[in-house]
Length: 154
Image 1 (cartoon, rainbow, N blue to C red):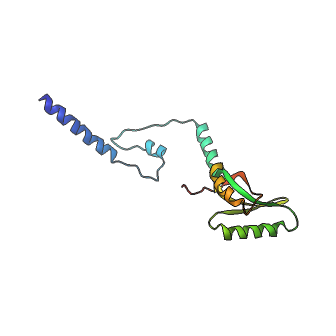
Image 2: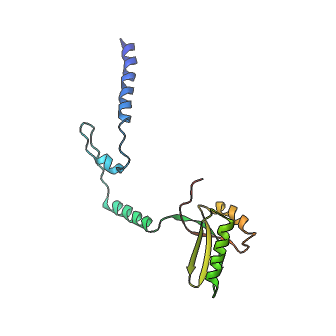
Image 3: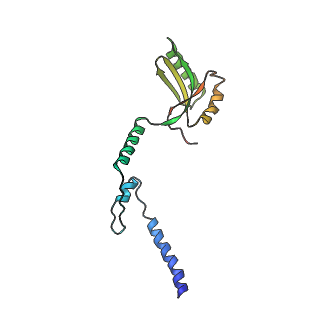
């Protein structure tokens, strides 16, 4: 009799575990809301959080929405001021895009300088690969820390 109970008990308990794992919450409902939702005969979870935490989370969310991207690195291939700097920057940008297709190029103006930066790199080491390749065409190139667009994950 004890052997039958010892065999049946784990079998029954594993069946209950499978039923509990099949109730997946929908992906579009945040976890906090899903936990606080009252479902009959399944219990209730109550989460008490400080309003300061909620405010900090909301502030961080708004800051990220205003400045999309992340901190990373780019390679500056052009940096000039003067009467013809804008036209020169456009020429450099055009020639770079023809030779290095697929690498993002960014033109910026920060009074009084026109600048051309290329690439979106998560770390300096990944920027170094392209940097050494670009030195033959752009000997004055250098790596700079900058806010970048999210690069594809390799």
